[in-house]
Amino acid sequence: MDVKVLGIVGAGQMGSGIAQVAASHGLRVQLFDTSDALAETGMSRIRRQLDARVAKQKLASDQRDAILGRIATGSDEGLLGQADFVVEAATEDAGVKRDIFARLDACTPAHAVLATNTSAIPITKLAAATGRPEQVIGMHFMNPAPVMRLVEIIRGLQTSDATYDAARALAGHLDKEVIGASDMPGFIVNRMLIPFLNEACFALQESLGTPEDIDRGAKLGLNHPMGPLELADLIGLDTVLYMAEVLHRELGEDKYRPPTILRNHVAAGWLGRKTGRGFYIYD
Ligand code: NAD
Image (cartoon, rainbow, N blue to C red; front, side, top):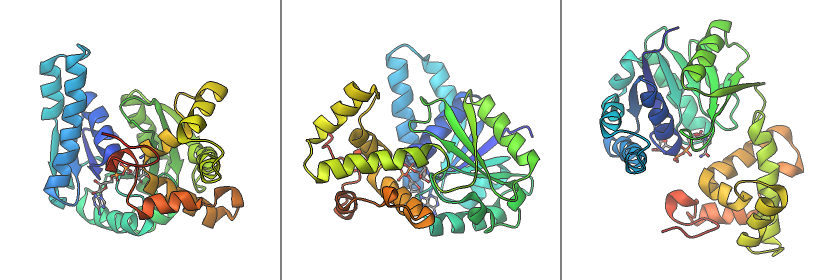
């Protein structure tokens, strides 16, 4: 399938990042959120990112303008009516995503592939909300999408070979490296990540060290580019909690149980960078 128009549902940090990547690789992008203001916030984030690249002379200003010119934003489902391929990147909540997939089935062209960027929700369950489960697939971009090379591609039980090939071709067009994963909770990357982030939260909860000490331990002792607590703040603590809950519920193992300190941060609205406070405070 030749993807010319990419629909993106959810203009948060992942949706806007994927939109930036796609428009930078010449695709027309339709960026949808629940209100025009939220969709425009995603567009502003892309503009800021591109402005920074122009300031560093990594991008010419006319290229920036051309990229921005390929992105349309809005909150009317009609926006997605010409999409060849949709990537859903809305809030990590199975109910919200199932509802979105049912709506996408109704408002997108019959040939369109419907992909989800979910971190942990089974693809087969989301596919079941549509009348085209063979055209539903997982495309799990990493954060930040414009920087990270990996995309995990996950086939649901009914995903067709043609849909898988279309997802791989799109990832290739976006200059991403692909790994394939089975439709199991957390797939490959988050199956490994959640026990690690959980353990860092337990270490903090048990006053083993300060957030800075714990993160420096991982950076200087394990050679990780980011510490687990700053990474959790970047991902969003609500998303981390939701992933841990899904893995714990579906796989039933203690190593995935969400720490109380994580639950309390989410209850307080301290969701990480996106709210200005998580395990750290941001300007
Ligand atoms: P976010 O909170 O930054 O953005 C979510 C966006 O979805 C918000 O703009 C919200 O308004 C929108 N939204 C909610 N309900 C919607 C609906 N019904 N229709 C359209 N838009 C709706 O979240 P995020 O970090 O961008 O995560 C989005 C998805 O990407 C989640 O599934 C998450 O698990 C996954 N993901 C996140 C990361 C990460 O590091 N944050 C990495 C990989 C994948």
